[in-house]
Amino acid sequence: MPRPSEITVVAPNFKRRLSGVTSTIIQLVPLQARSLPIATLGPGLPDTLPKLSWRDLPKLWRRPKGRPFRIWHARRNTEMLAGVVLRDLLRMPLKLLFTSAAQRHHTGWTRFLIGRMDAVVATSERSRAYLTVPARVVMHGIDLDRFSPDGPMPAGELAASLDGRSIVGCSGRIRHQKGTDLFVAAMIALLPDHPDWTAVVTGRVTAENRAFAETLHRQIAEAGLEDRILLVGEVHDIAAWFRRFDLYVAPPRNEGFGLTPLEAMASRTPVVASDAGAFAEQIVEGVTGRVVPPGSATALAAAIAPYFGDAGLRERAAEAGLAHVREHFPLQREAGELAAVYETLWSSAA
Image (cartoon, rainbow, N blue to C red; front, side, top):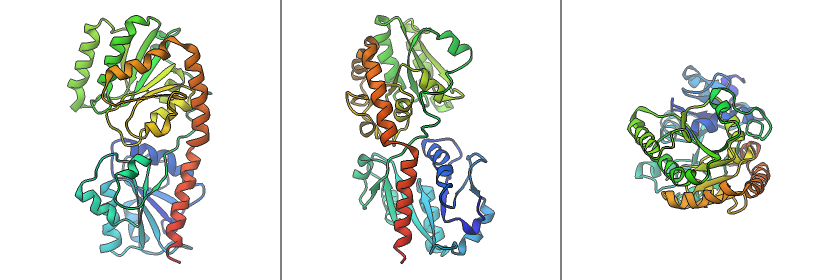
């Protein structure tokens, strides 16, 4: 890693628990670091990433070599606030960039912080529509080496028990916002008529969502489908499961951006998703998969059913999805577009 005084872009991460934002930083920063001196700052990140420690902060008052200032690339309110304090109160030579994925009207506090930014990026057209300042759309990409049709399938007792079965997958923390209950309801409606299919739900249950998960288990048991709707918890390598799924379902009621449909399509798996996050901008309707209104288990089941019964439909959607993601959503594209935003900021000082 370059010396702290040489770092030109700081990517703060002020949330210890793994989240979608943290996952983006973990995937993106190593690629960015190949072409520019960038480092992360904060907890909850692997040691493989270039990192600044809090002890390094005083060194950032010196301007980086060859640049008029550093760029502080925030993705959360706390990180925007820290940047404002460092730049405006402590006079650190910084320009502030914020990436917004939210698909809702921002609070007054968030709007105030966004108004203090030097530039703003939105992760989708829908996210940009909720902003009251100019923003450039830079959609997230994914690691096409990790998420690929080529690679190992899941190993272990669970995977072995599913040999020969068609699998419909759903991945994400088990909670209301993620629509896990909608997926379970759709499966309860569909699986009795499709005996070759099993549903696998991967994802952690946090303490505050334990009662929600217990309700799902009870509904599954009452339907007599305990051996066909499996809530398996967190899995070690989700990329292997995306390869194994014959169909992937993303049912959230609301989402920021949402990477899992892209990860599934990159693994050559067709997708049915709710119209949440940026899913409608990721999926080519009727070609790479389907997008349905959020919050409706009935609509979800109606969109899933044709894929259960038609292997040719799944095959065509899988091929189209793979080609679509490889063309439009490589991580390298996101890194390149962000580099252009950084250069525009640096050029503004000329």
